[in-house]
Image 1 (cartoon, one colour):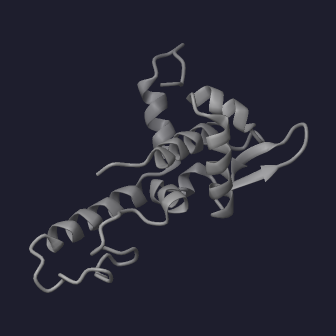
Image 2 (cartoon, rainbow, N blue to C red):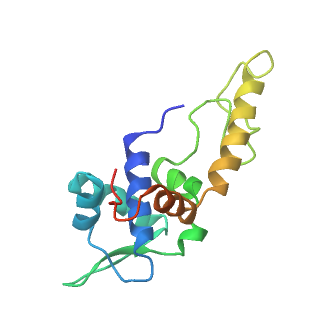
Length: 151
């Protein structure tokens, strides 16, 4: 399984914003610099995340972006779905219960469908259970005292 650059960058940006939750808006330029991301691409990603209700924005000299909900209430799955529309790109597995084979004319004879359903169900369970709070907690635990947050 391969996650797109959009998903990876979006997750990194959201984790960076989670670090500042409750401290007010953060400019995308700051997030881009902290994470080594392209600002124009990050602006596109932030627009998608805002439309999905995961980010809020404020205009003005002290404006920027902030999480719309606490980090513990935003899952990795929420972010991926906001950016890509689904968690997996296998035709016989659809969003929802993972049992819809719409778009696959081999459902009745496919020997691998069970594998994809199993992978999908485990992936959904894992990504739904991981929150931004988990991610920033892991990173803080990995960072030595006096070390920097970046990659």
